Image 1 (cartoon, rainbow, N blue to C red):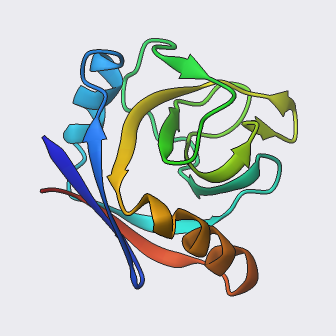
Image 2: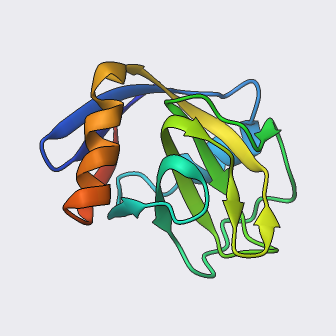
Length: 137
């Protein structure tokens, strides 16, 4: 199943990493359509993030986890050392928080609109937060 991501004027199509992160994908699908806000990451380099506080979606542990996502490799961090969040990298990124390096579950990959990842990142860096929606395509 494809996912449509819309943040302000930016739109993307992404594919769920069902085989590599089945528990995370199933938990995320239960949240669809998912509405939130995306802002620039503070410690992760060229990435935006969606802070989710103490949201617990029942993920038991890491799956397909990485600290070095490529642009468009969307990560779900289920909480622990830092708050629950979604990381949305648009360039060189090393996933981290104030407490240090983190690893997030790579559960979603942008497959259309990758040329618009950097403009989104630069928008949230220089102009501020955008509403973001993830929906089944």
